[in-house]
Length: 250
Ligand SMILES: [Zn+2]
Image (cartoon, rainbow, N blue to C red; front, top):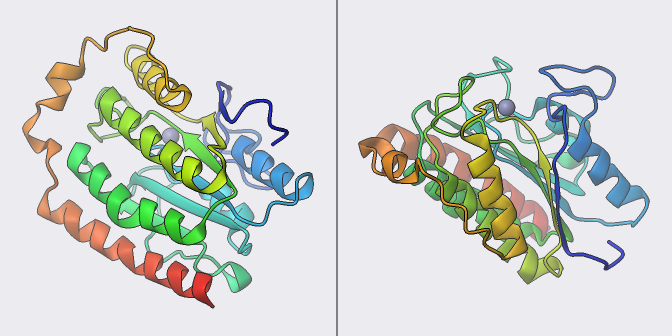
């Protein structure tokens, strides 16, 4: 915010997005990304901050903290009916003044490259273009990777690299490239490092030269393509984007 760097990655533990205002949950004590958003509001007076959460679990804490606030757009892609159960339905779209500024896209278990690309192209990116963020915050969890013991999605490091590249491009267009990614879940000790490195490389615009030795195998799995039931879930999440667009035009 003070112009020293445009992009940051917060490699923190514990994660934060399940923490509510007054209690921890789901390995989280303090909601790190929410603290960052609140500081950007209080200290720097920003009026349009987005938080994109691609952790495999729903960011219930972040949603609840800001669901009544039209200045903070929260978008979550998560595995339908994982932890916390009964949280993050597509019908949860914000409350009061914040109605339209919460977007949930629950994806069926087994979602991979095609589903996440479609969700980004039809839900996340159009919402961000309409919102024109002054700061892009990311809840960067890697438990949607194919190797994660707590999730059932099948993403590769290349998919995380692609999502980070899209978010950086949004930030370049709207807010001088200001992206702050905050580490969330990711429980495969073997594979999380390759996914996180891919995001850091994408945000920094550099390459470490380190090769993901598992990429070829996972990216060639058959069900990486968008499936009909995944397409239907994404179509349902296009409706809240239409609501957001109406709110932004009002
Ligand atoms: Zn998680």
